[in-house]
Image 1 (cartoon, rainbow, N blue to C red):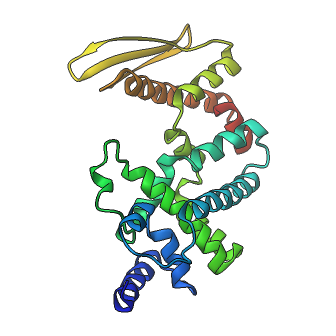
Image 2: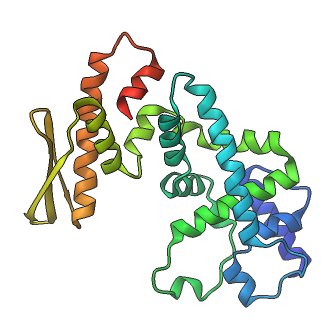
Length: 250
């Protein structure tokens, strides 16, 4: 890769991400996707993308775990696990990557987008985790933590995390079993735009969701019902601390 193009690319990356890397070659390791490496000549000493992704995932989990451990001192292990799983889910990671405009910095193979099942969100998530890995090696833990928490700050809010839960059906079931010793019941009928699902907790509450597939409709219905039940639980526990409220919610 010509030096002038590398320099221009790194300059764009610095402007987009707001980080100046000491080792440009290390940065390339996170931004040159394996699909690009397979189609183009790359430096032999370039760090392995998958190894960086693995390491960055571990760094992210450590930083997020420490943060939520500090934020919710009354949360038990189950609740902390739930919060962490939401924060490091593909749904959140892809949002952060898009907000960072990471796609502008990545170099992908031309054949990749033509492959069946191509997932842009997965590539963004993998590349973001690889970026966290190179940030650690280039900048150290303190600056990596600062970078991650700055960009995850909008999601470090319990109410928003509840809406973004990647497994609302599981959350709803846990909530219903804990509070009422009941299991949600789902039923579905065809709808003009797909499938209409009703979920109900007998003698407690019910909600409806419509989606293109049964799974999508069930998740929508579960999210709505969680919000309704959560509002009821908050009304019942206004005198409890925020940590204790969350224990009721999750």
